[in-house]
Amino acid sequence: MSKFTPIVLGLRIAYGAALIVAPHRLAGRWLGPGAARAPVQVPLRALGMRELLLHAGALSAALRGNDVRPWLAASIAGDLTDIASTVAGRGELPAGAAPATAVVAGGSALMSAALLKL
Image 1 (tube, rainbow, N blue to C red):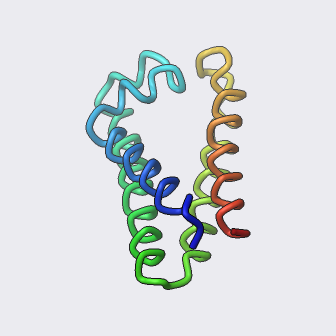
Image 2 (tube, helix red, strand yellow; image 1 turned 30 degrees about the vertical axis):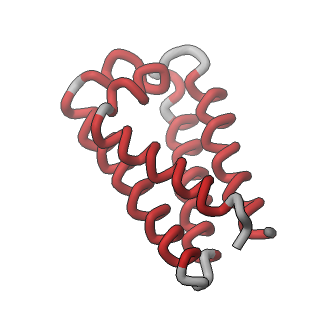
């Protein structure tokens, strides 16, 4: 396990928790004013729970000396799904949401991929 693994996973856990607690604050620039509405917050909280549980599982595995590769592969798949979903809906999202999501989620996927190699 790299010394960076717990840091990266901890940040992803914190992001997931923040999405659960305050989805509109984290997703406003991504999804626009609709992020403040309850129907939009439901899947945002689900996304937050995905992040929290997936990366908590990875952190637990890493701390026990178990293989984190399946966890990181699932994390990468989730990030790529976020990008694809955003690109598919870009016509009704705020300007710049799709490229920003590609940068943020793509960066997250690259961090997870880097951890796979460390």
